[in-house]
Amino acid sequence: MRAVGVLTGLVVLGAVVPATSATATADEASVSATPTIVVAVSGDDSAPGTLARPLRTIQKAVDKARPGDVIAVRGGTYGLTDNITVTTSGTASQPISLEAYQGERVVIDGEKLPASHTPVGGSIPRAERGAVHQEASYWRMSGLEIVNGPYGIYCDGCNNNVFSRLTTHDNYESGFQLQGASSNNQILNLDSYGNRDPRKNGESADGLAIKEGSGTGNVVRGARLWNNVDDGFDAWKFTSPIVIEDTITYGNGFNRWNFPDFAGDGNGFKMGGGSPAPAVAHTLRNSVAFKNAKHGITDNGNPGALALSRNSTFRNTGTGFDADGSGSRAVLSGNLSIADGRAVALGSATVSQGNSWNLGGSWGESSVQSTDTGAITNPRDADGSLPSAPAFLVPRDGTAIGARL
Image 1 (tube, rainbow, N blue to C red):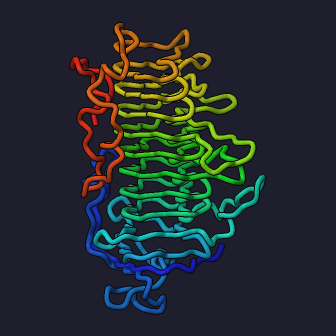
Image 2 (image 1 turned 60 degrees about the vertical axis):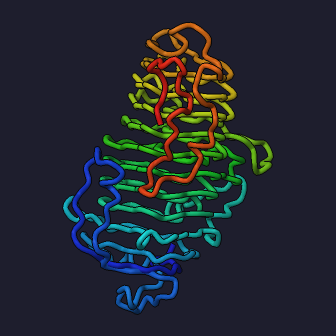
Image 3 (image 1 turned 120 degrees about the vertical axis):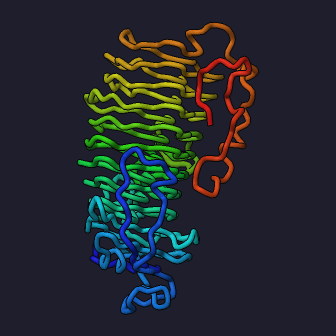
């Protein structure tokens, strides 16, 4: 991996960007400062990186950036021959920003990266993981589309970052993976879909993976994770609590690529796992999983006190709420299962209260206002938030269970 990748872009360095707390809203996290480094496909890496004379590659801009700078990338496709490597950190008062310039469409394409075409059974060297490979803190990254990489974004040892309004699709591993010692990151309004891993026949490419690491304060909000070869969301062997809310997973785990010896799991939300699985009290609330190849939501053997509240599952092939792992202490409250293979599987220590299966009666498709998935699969609103779907899986009788989108 070279220090500078062959990538064209526009970088603009800007004014100080205030730090964002782990509880900031998506709107707060996406506010831009004046750009200070600009990148454009028509630029030149010997240029000063201004709007009139932009740089050519995103890597050059990243290498130039210092705390408080804003890198603005002009629209276009930036084809990589080496991945973009981010190792310089911002500070709490002066984060570094990397964003699309004024909402222009920026595509980072990793198709020509050698690691994107790792053979079956092969491994990807750590430094080559990700079209964007980050080992840095206090960054704000927004408005980018990342495709065909060996992972889309791979972030290891990353703290206090805000990732907003990103799209990661058709990558050769997980669309977005956060791992290692990583704390206080916000992943907001992510769309991640169609990611697959030919080298593993579908065993590990998720829409969003926060796995194999630790660190408190990580938050996922407003994500859509769909049609990925393995799981929508995966928290395998992450030993610290993660909060996931207002997030949608669907269509994961189907062999759309005709892989031999297919190994995709197909869960909407995989809330842990490992051998042995660490006990972790992840939180999942106001989220929806539908039409996944296996379970909608599963503890995957996590014996911790998962908090699963006001979520909805619909037409998952397996179980809507699978919380029967050995020693599971999950607490399920106010959840709704409609037309899943089965509604719920509970362990002896699992707490279940006020859910559709506790309330009695019939909870079929006719018991909710709408099962039309069209509304929540529509384009996002202008601010990056999820499209409104006020009737989707909402009980006709007004019972206060399930998600509200």
